[in-house]
Image (cartoon, rainbow, N blue to C red; front, side, top):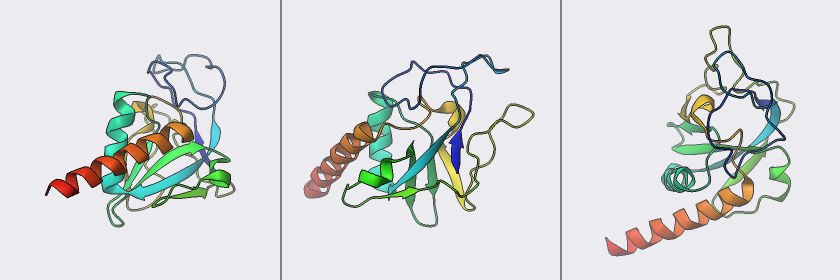
Length: 155
């Protein structure tokens, strides 16, 4: 399953999944409890707009970039896939896959992205939240789609 468990700074902004903060870890920041996650996948153009919106307002969790498919994947709390209905995106349950996300290696650096051919757009240690809040992501994706539509009409 996809799990997060990386030390994060940040301001505890909206979109932070999980309960209270854990003990401090070697990197000096508070530890976020490990938890299962689902993955919302969107086209890269819309996803990049949404990342900018989330960074400016509510915080964003870890985000994967798949260059081959030209998509972004937002980590969201487990169970999000059950009710996800945003057109142009997909939400995949990742539980039971045995992939640890954001686990600290011995040197304190996050592991490589869990899927071959992907890279971190927002790495776990640089994220403002353990996972992106699905309601906040839904709103950001909607705003991003409207922004892209407006830009495309002007060209």
